[in-house]
Amino acid sequence: MCICCFSKVKMPVLCSSCAKKRAVLKRPKTGHSLCKDCFFWAFEEEVHRTIMAAKLFKPGETVGIAASGGKDSTVLAHVMKLLNERYSYGLELMLISVDEGITGYRDDSLETVKRNQEQYELPLKIVSYEELYGWTMDAIVKQVGLKNNCTFCGVFRRQALDRGAIILKVDKICTGHNADDVAETVLMNVLRGDIARLRRCTAISTASEGEGVVPRCKPLKYAYEKEIVLYAYFKKLDYFSTECIYSPNAYRGYARTFLKDLESIRPSSIMDVIHSGENLSVREGVKMPVQGTCSRCGYISSQALCKSCVLLEGLNRGLPKLGIGKHHRLHDKILSQQPLTEKEERKLKAVDF
Amino acid sequence: MAAPVGVHLEFGGGAELLFNGVKEHQVTLPSQSDPWDMKQLLVWIRRNLLKERPELFVQGDTVRPGILVLINDADWELMGELEYQLEDQDNIVFISTLHGG
Ligand SMILES: [Zn+2]
Ligand SMILES: [Zn+2]
Ligand SMILES: [Zn+2]
Image (cartoon, rainbow over all chains, first blue to last red; front, side, top):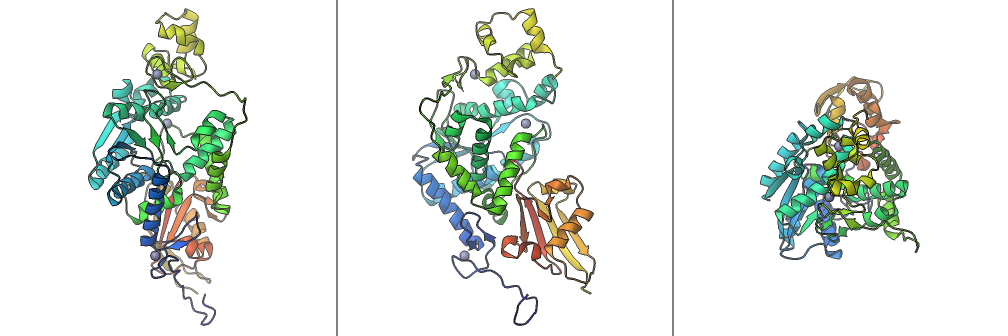
């Protein structure tokens, strides 16, 4: 309501950067009101600065963009392509997608990635659980039931990108993790008391940790989810949104809601949590788990066998409970291909979970 | 009495799943003594359009944190949020940021 004429005149807010055009959003990070073009520019330049400050890439590298068809990876692919051209990074970019083999779930998102491939003129490689592990998620669910399948889904997904990247000979993988994701992970690791992960999770990039692992980085680490979604919306980027039909992680869901609630009161909360994570130091003498490698596939693992090799062994032997719960003492037996005792078999076979 | 207002509603980013998967809705808000504002619109949506799990869309008298609202293609934080008074032919977009990236 305008106080001088008492009519319903709505004054458009002007862009605080160019002072010419109508502002379309209030940035959560800075509180600035920006018009579409000034927002695009600010968003892209911030990602560029993040990339430069952390020296994420070297000219000539082949970089795989983890593409799920979702908002984060779609914005990442778009911005990486754009910055690679604008600033001549000299990178060979490609999209890598993982197909878990869940009927109906990936179909639409993979279609989205295929369209992205054409829109951004980037080569796309889809690696499937079937070709990586010999099992689709649908087949796994048939064997283990619906209660524990997310253990498989999560563990296999973590390694799928690495295994795929090695087949494709990429030098680095970049993922669409945004500021909200990183803050959420900091929180989760505090809640779990996982000091080792807490120390690692804020890192913007990881060096290769063994032969089975490809270095990873997160160019959107400081980008707020709100801005990513609005960037995609205003640019009319083509993305897909859905929930994993095989049970979402309830605990993580609460952490996410908690952060969103905090953010709605004070938008800087997200960045504050990240900074807390970055600045934590661990007292000397605190025992850290020794990082070893899996003796079967070479992936980082604190046990003789990595989690996905144990899960696979269980699936292939018809003992699906093998990887669920702690059965470390069986690793040696599995590795030396000794038969399990009847009692051990019985314990691991029961599908009453 | 204010005349009925016709508004175009759009749900995206996964929020449409709470509305039977329907993304776009052209609705007419009945005439009432006071002008319609966003706060009343949310009550109306909850009563007339929401199909399931209302707690995933509204919280208290506002939208659940993590759902972005655009009024005529501008962030509602620039438009007075709940107090914004609706006009005929307004376009309101709700985008969930809570679904997989
Ligand atoms: Zn501007
Ligand atoms: Zn899952
Ligand atoms: Zn392994």
